[in-house]
Image (cartoon, rainbow, N blue to C red; front, side, top):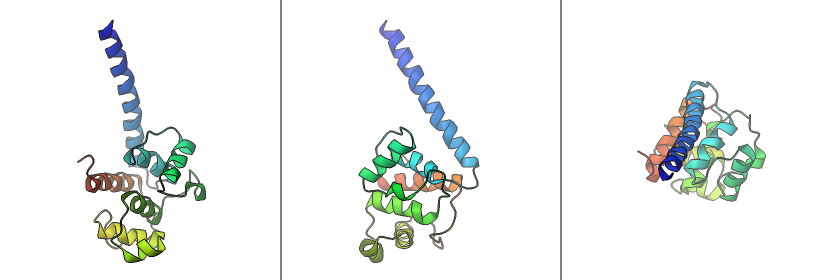
Amino acid sequence: MKQMLAFILVFCASAVFAQDIGFVNELAKKETATFGDAVKLFVPAAGGQSAGFQADAQFLEAQGIIKASRYAEGETLRKGTLALMIANQMKLGDSLLFAVIGTRRYAVTACVAAEIMLPGSGEWEIVSGSELIETIRVMMEKKGGAK
């Protein structure tokens, strides 16, 4: 009986994991990522468990990562928005202007200084799906997470 229960738990866990892999594979193909895509990827990176856009957005807002109510799920993701999420999550203080003003423009500067984003990135540039995945990966690596 214990073996059967263990098998069922492993099977269910692998089904959930497969859904996440499917999402990441589809996201990698997208030319333009959305705010909803960033939220779904960011919640696990922030220590939460994805439970749908509304719950995920509330989680990120409660963590002080982003004021999600200012954004729509299908809104095109811009580098400034992604940088703001990262800078707030990692509490980047490398940029004095970001520490004082806290805008997307200076969040990009802070992420470049932390070597999470490449130099020359503007806050209004559109983020692709693969770029979103890579940026989150680099953030987690810098944070000491998955390598």
